[in-house]
Amino acid sequence: MATSVTVACVGSSSTAGKGQAFNWIVELARRPQNRRFTFRNFGIGGDLSFNVLERLPQVLDYRPKIVVVAIGNNDVLALASPKARRFFRIVKRLPHTPSAAWFRENLAAIARGLKDSGRATVALCSLPPIGEDPDSAQPFQHELNRRSGQLNAMIHDIAQEESVAYIALNEAMSAQLSTSPHRALTSFRFFPLYRDAFRTLALRKTPDQVASLNGWRLHSDGIHLNSRGGMILADLVQTFIDGVGGEPGGVMPIKHTHM
Image 1 (spheres, one colour):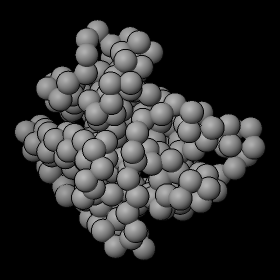
Image 2 (cartoon, helix red, strand yellow):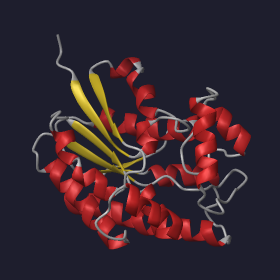
Image 3 (cartoon, helix red, strand yellow):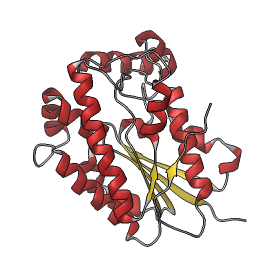
């Protein structure tokens, strides 16, 4: 009997796949071609790059052969919103105020820690858009786009520097959004997030039903992915794990194939 290959998926709420976030890891696990893989979900809601770095030893304890890292959207929110920045600083017990330079330092350390374990083939995902208006002039959405672009450039550079794979999630989602009506995320507010969590956890609505209520195409709430957005990520990760053979490392700009 073939030995199962452990795939670790590391990130925040969009990886955890709870509440209003589509569970793309469950989607991968149910595919017949993935029978030889055991998927481990290391997503924790609200995590920033610092928090993932802190719990990296827990990931390595499972000795994964493949690791997909999708972290940074909460770093973007902390950079773009003073309210989010205060919230994450307290709730996630951050030692200092988030910055782009700190994100780069943390992500590089994550990539090195996984790669230097000598066991895992690693991929870094670019960040999914927050909001759905890539060229927005609305101030908050514009700042989100600017910060996402800044961090995505860092993710690509780190993938090159550390010789790990790069999964072009932002690029694939942005291409989808360029052909659809645009909607800006105009502010960071807690009430809509709690309301949508109530809709999914208490009223049993799916992320897609929440998306329909809120008027989003690839998100349920402008931040978390619905099935349309989540399937883009699932298919990109599928392409990555299908291509993992005897050659670890190397920057791989994975293309979007899901229709």
